[in-house]
Amino acid sequence: MWNEMTNAAILQTLGERLKEYRLRRNLQQAEMARYAGVNISTVSRIEKGQNIMFDSYLRIMRVLDMLDNLDEFIPEPPRSPLLMKKLMGKKKQRIKKTKEDNYE
Image 1: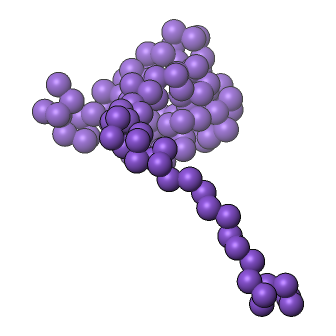
Image 2: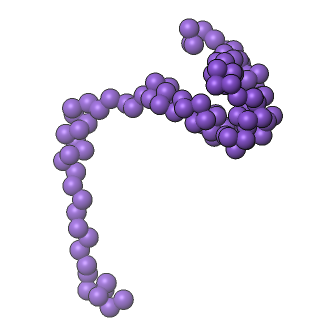
Image 3: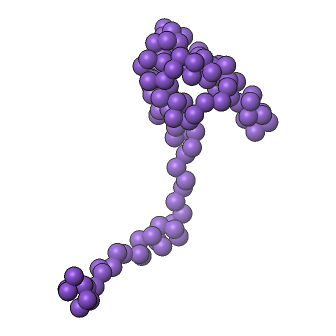
């Protein structure tokens, strides 16, 4: 579904969904803006599907208790057993002091 949509269409859909969640919480745009620490124009722009800063999306999602959904948005990459073995094999080494370090 998402791959067939333009960026503008995706923003429009996300904006409509966020608006629906705001309305279900019985919040006005001004209240949402105040709780999120953004301008009311930012709330209006996101609901219209216009481009806003990602930080503002996060602020609005926090007010709507939707931050747990970020794992679905960008899931943590799976770790392969080979990568884990490679990472485990690299241990921090101590930095050896030289005679010159002692004189500083």
